[in-house]
Image (cartoon, rainbow, N blue to C red; front, side, top):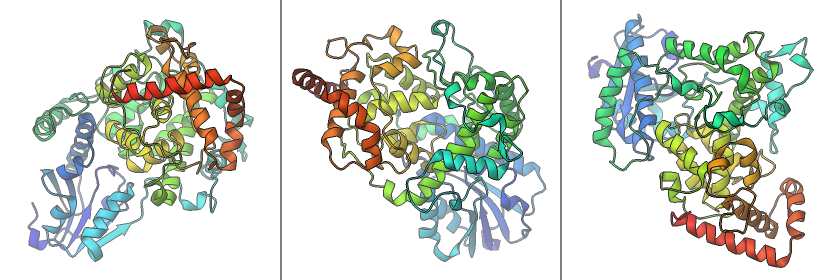
Length: 516
């Protein structure tokens, strides 16, 4: 350990900047007065009721990165602080350094904390871990992801040929909407969670981390205490990436929106936790997808690339620009508490029960279950969007402020009123019945509404349509997109309208009481 009074400059490597190409590893630093520092801060781990696996995974990846750093010929000394009971800035200040250097955190809140506590000592370097900057967005909303995505494809030359999109079109989304095969109800395809990626070093790390976290966290914390079946370092992450490209990418495209109770990830990659910690760079993942074997359909490659080069980068810029607005955004003014079923309380709704179990056991479910099951129900149940956001942020392995907040408050809950989405992503039971196998084993009938066994999604959906029609504060684009469904609602009889609204109110009460 370097003597504290000899440290003049600290170069802080954050837990979501675990890149072997981190700028600080390529700088000319002093071996006598500079220190590369990493910190496990337990106070930071307490900020939200994080899923135990999320904390275990972050700490395991950090420790594995530190092991690799210690093997290298670093330009200066390196110190790793385990399970500190102090905040980052308290640990940093204990060294008495005149300067504390940090690459701009991906999470803006982290930079706020560092600047507030370290003040003039804090030296911020540009964040080099993303592919787009603010100039890629127009000056003001509305922002169109498709326009942004085409500009990114052109700028980076991905899936392009002589200045035009490969295959003659930019977007193959229409080819990527197949429902699951009925046979998958009994025998689902193997997903990325089927294989254990831990080696002996990982097992030792997880054992240490789990023991300490069990001592630290409340015994009733939501989430299973088990190690994630994911790589923790670059070498195994590259094998993991190669397995996705060669074994699942071809089916990812057509079935990216399909939902199956027996498969948490289906054909999805599972790469987002690795990418959001920078264990794997988005550049490397995009290159691998673009160079996939010839038998992988272009629609699958394009659909996957769109998630990374398009949505991931787009939403980060949206959040950077509108972060202040998102702190209080609540377009519909909803204020219900998050129902107990989100914390594992039993429910007879098979889709919600299955997906919450996926999250509880693995801190993961893929994007359509997040959007059209969990997010959809929360919006229809009039839940406070910030409660929904904090839940997603706390329980998912890949959820961080910059990516989860625009996804939840913007795309899922429409709390921002349409900064980039033109309508809420809501549906009745029909969509879930079409795109999943959940309804086959459910106590509720997706084709019924007012009956005792009618699917709650149906009454809640029509009540939402009625509620939004009554609200006159809508933006023009929202009104245009919702107009057709408002018209359908108006054609219902007054007796049916009254019955639907009464049942929806009862369903929200039952959901809040954990009786659904």
